[in-house]
Image 1 (cartoon, helix red, strand yellow):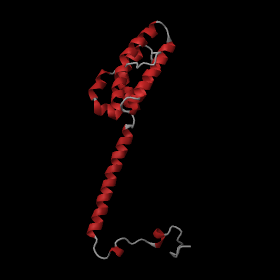
Image 2: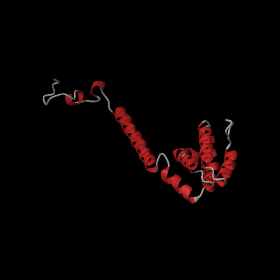
Image 3: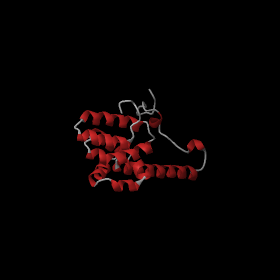
Length: 161
């Protein structure tokens, strides 16, 4: 670890277990920092998988900072996690599942509002296309706007100042 070599997740768990038994909190923190740096350089899917593997053993051996980082990373990538491997959540504890579901990003209410917005936007576009197709005649009479709509500074007479 101190030589700058790559610290794999399994080796870190072994190091964390030893450092926890020998009461070496700085070693736990330094190793956790190195693991976070290595996880940040991985592909998102690999990092999510590593976080899932690390989470429970790290909590067990008092690696609180790394456990918090893993939980935060999993919350931010909750949709990817569910799409990648929904069965991997089976191995998490109930408290972990509850925390992830509660703190997921984007939240459920946002996704529901976004879906509703997209649905309304599609309906509006459909109505707009339908109204353009049904209107006939000269294009200059297709949309008639009042002078106030043309010029926001228009007075009551319709003249722009």
